[in-house]
Image (cartoon, one colour):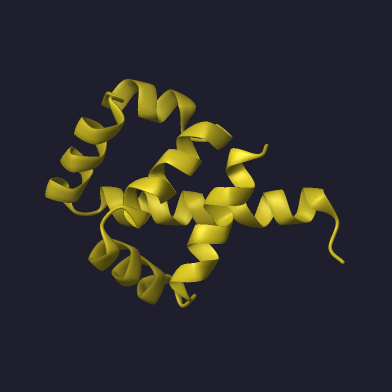
Length: 91
């Protein structure tokens, strides 16, 4: 079994990568901000917060085509991103 801090680190790294992927497309980035209620400054300030990263992954989960496309670009199954969200929600 892997230590919890390693699992949390992996979840954080996955979520940060997913955040970068999300922000790379302006319409998707605008939708993220609108649905999470974050503004660009708050997102920059809180990008490392587990709650914000979980919200990003939840945002992707809510729109399956984005979840699948993000997972594909990262080379992981979509379930890995879903599990990362669940991990970050418990941090």
